[in-house]
Image (cartoon, rainbow over all chains, first blue to last red; front, side, top):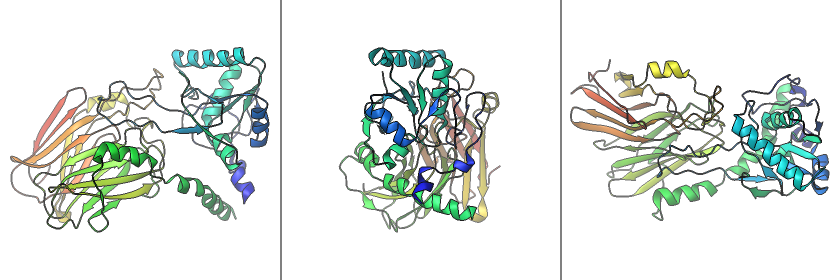
Length: 169
Length: 254
């Protein structure tokens, strides 16, 4: 039973596509990502203890600019891997130039501060956004890219701590 | 065997959503909606029909039946989806409505969430029921209709009467963009653009009016208790760009 919970639908894992996933992001992900190291919860935890850079790409739409000011708006809270950097909305299949620039500049800043560290991309289990983001990082020439498909779901289930996080400005 | 495995997986996965059935979001929403006023349990007074698991998170059917507030007539009905970024879906002013009344619409549900119907009586009592709906991505799901088609039919209205059921249905063609939908071409969020006000009256008598939001599905559709016959029914809608759409229908529908 526990094994089932840790690895749901492995048998359903689709083959790795050539390009980015463009929609229907909450679905079983491939078992592989060409050019990246795919890490389990245990491996991710070891990387975390070792000071790796964790990049959370869980989407969180900004409040629409033209929403009336009295409309109640509540951004869903997010608990993530402690110390992670949240680059919200960078896991879509196609990014506007500003979004890609944001993705690059925040990654660069992290790597300047912590040179040579592994970079671990994640969101939730069965979410293609982390797969897309890791793929994009590889395409942009970043090295040491790790993909942690179980994300915060697997992290929580493994009894590891989570902490509230806000998107990186 | 495969079904057995699936069933096991569902049970295990069920643990997390169950734990997520908390009231944290509601605590914030309640403060905005009702302040510190007491809210009564609406069991027996209101029935909320919502699917436990929605087939399409962008089109989740919701029915509210007012059944037993006794002499206290309901003047306002608010639909809430706790976990939506814009949790207050719409507020219906039920002026001129008394007795048993039911109202159905279609809403967007962005993640597993409580859906609530909060009724306010003419005397100012608040009565609420809730139901848990498993659906995800309803607010950000791409529009079902392409933008060109949506614009071509913008503001078209339908008024259908189901006399044998004592109901009528109003529909306004409008994309009701949530502001959370990614435009596949520009790769930016499509700006919010939705029906913010809907008024339905028969002759000069208001049947109901609605203040809408981005959590209401595209082509807003309201079905409500209605006795056919009498003066023509006028439907007037106003969207967030200030466009006004108005049409009168025979009382027996069209």
